[in-house]
Length: 261
Image (cartoon, rainbow, N blue to C red; front, top):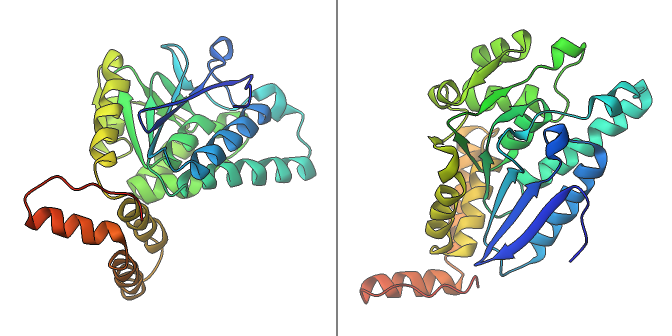
C-alpha cells in the first residue's frame, strides 16, 4: 500500500476507510491531498474485496474546512483552470466509483469539503456539523462541482441562497433541505456508516453497481431515456449468476451467497 502523507487509508471487512488527515489545518484540501485521494479511490475501484468506502476527516473539528487558501491565492487564470479541472476529475471519480461511498461529515464541511461530501453516494452528519459554500467571500465561486451538485440535491432556490450568501448551515438544517441523509451524535458517526455499509454488503455487488449507474446516469436524462437505461441495466442483471442465486435463495428461503458474477 502506498505511504500517504495527507490521508489515512485502510481496508477491513470489505470496507475501505479514507480519512483526510491534516487536522492542524482543519483537513484543508491542497492538490497533494487531492492526488492521494485519487490514488486511494483508484485502489478501491480495482479491489473486488472492497464493497463500500467510508470517507471522513481526522479529529472532531472538521471533515474538510475548505481548500488550501495559500495554494488558491497563487493561482493564475491559466493554472486555476487546470487546478479546477484536476479537482473536478477526482471528485467525479468518487461519484462514479461504482461502489457506494459514505461521507461521515464530522464538524466543518466548507467549500471543497462540502463539494467532496456531495460527490459521495450518501452523507451522514455529526450533530455538530456545519456545511456551506463560502467561496464568494473570497471573490471566487465553487470550483469542485458545488454550483452543479448542490442545486441537484436541494433545488435551485436553496442552492442559490447558500452559494450567494456564503453562509454555513447546521447539520439539522442540512438534513431538513436534503443535503445530508441523517444526523447522528458525533461519537456514533462511523458506527452508523458501518451499519449502513453492512446492509449494502449483504446485497448483490453487480446489482448495487448497476443501480448506482442507473441513478447517476439517468438523473440528467429525460424520463423516457432514463427508463430505457433502467431497462437495459435490469436486463444485464438478469444475465448474472447473482440474479440466479438471489432468486433461487428467495424461493428456497435461505440467505443468498452473492459472488459479484
